Image (cartoon, rainbow, N blue to C red):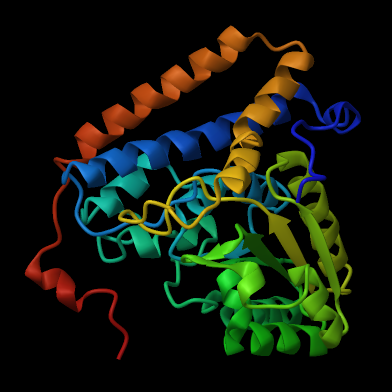
Length: 331
């Protein structure tokens, strides 16, 4: 863990144009500001339900989704706000959903744990741990049979690797060489249990050698490292040589859910990861590329203003009616 750098390599930064870097940075800041704003809305009792947030893991979602085509799909988890924003969902759509409005991305029926939008090629989040993995394998099978050239990226946490659905889904994809990229966001904790308490291997990526496919571990707080490793996996899948498992080493800066104070995280470990903030890492890189810090600060201020405006709008959006109980039901 301690060999991970605190900054993005300048040689890697030079391979990207400034517009792409700025948009990656902007998208990560949108996720962070959305999550921080939503956290306070829940704490003050303004917003219903519960939340599982991803502060600190923004580079995983943004780097991965930037490596996908618009018509590629993703599956997500109950910690899916960042995935949704990275895949192109707007903060208004998400806030409407979190407030339970019928105009939300899931018509107010999903809430925080099930956000998604089929028109954006994101399956609404699946709250069952590892539940999206076999679904992704099935989607990838459809893409292969239809010869569409599409890829599905399935996000899940380190806690999912102990579930049978992980092994079954990955093995199925391996047998049929399906165009699926399995992305494990290893934030080191499944709820409050550290990952080294539930497996002997040092790297989750080593697990898939038993299925005969490639596994790779990368720095999940370096958005460019994520983008490149996912991009390589996506290209491999499009060539018909998939699937691939990618383990992204990252860290959540907040609790498993809104009432978790993270007392189980050792101080030295927490300090290490707090010094590796993915947004600050790319921000410093942008400054080295000649972007003014004031421009980055102005970008954040605009995002904060947009969030507050979206909250005010969301609070007055229409709620579902009794008649909505009979919509979106298949039986």
